[in-house]
Image 1 (cartoon, rainbow, N blue to C red):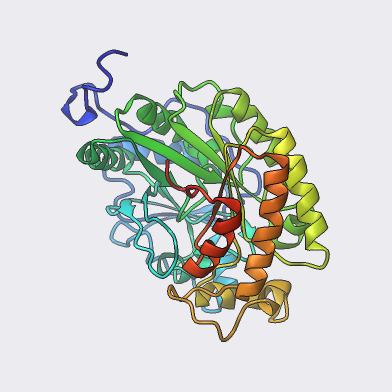
Image 2 (image 1 turned 90 degrees about the horizontal axis):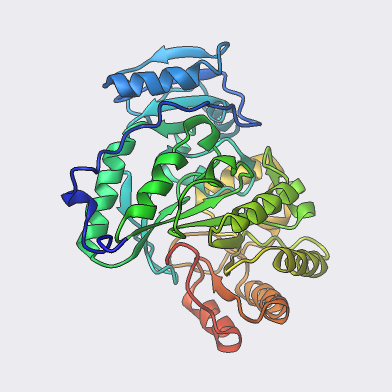
Length: 390
């Protein structure tokens, strides 16, 4: 469109985003909702009420509680222990609003470039035992699954931030949630993807473990939404990723999205050094890269906050494979637990060699690593840009 680079959404009367209302909501497999909480801001407009009613109708046996004065992150689940709290949280669906949904990350002490990200959801119902989100301040005390209904306001903020930058800029959808796990319920993709497709500067990067891409395949995305999948070898996923779509189903979804023209990326993280990890990751990466036209591949180790590690060890025991390899006496600038530095370098170098041998053209990156490790790996394997940026 000749006028596309001249017309900014904020200046256009046609920019009137709304919640999706006329669609068929579908229950995501594995999301068994026992209670629904209507938190602060959830029902403040007729549009929000209609949207919520459509989703609630799919869970007729769930209890429904209205808490119009309670923020989405202050829901009392009636439990105190971290395991019981999270067990109740992933069965609790909260509708609310998030005023600070569009933010720029402020990582220090590692090589993260810092990037814009946004949240139309909070947390997810998957049961990955290593989940770093479980230890974040916004989840630890109230680990519920959240849908934020102020979507139009979120898009206006993205619009303003992108227009201020006056250059193509990525907005990452997956830092504090799974970007697609709830899409069959909300159909948010039918609003988000066209928004980014038409915007002069804003681009979307979605990270997911979901295989539900049906809504996305016929949308006019113009290559401005990048889809990235979090993956591990099937044997490892079976041990550490409960209630998550199988790896093969995710790979099939990647192929379908690629055929629909979406730019595809993958994040293999956290690498988990189980016995025989070299052969398992070798086989997995060669198969993945031969089947899917991945443009950028990011590798990463464990990088847990203290509370996330506590929850993991309550579930798996303190002698689990991940914890046994965490360096207890190695200082980290960002307060995240990581494997011993020598192990990380060995794993990254080994797998980078496999990647370069299989796909010499692919862009390769490391996630949330310290400068020392990044420099060692970069010297031999020419690292590129991270998953979360353009």
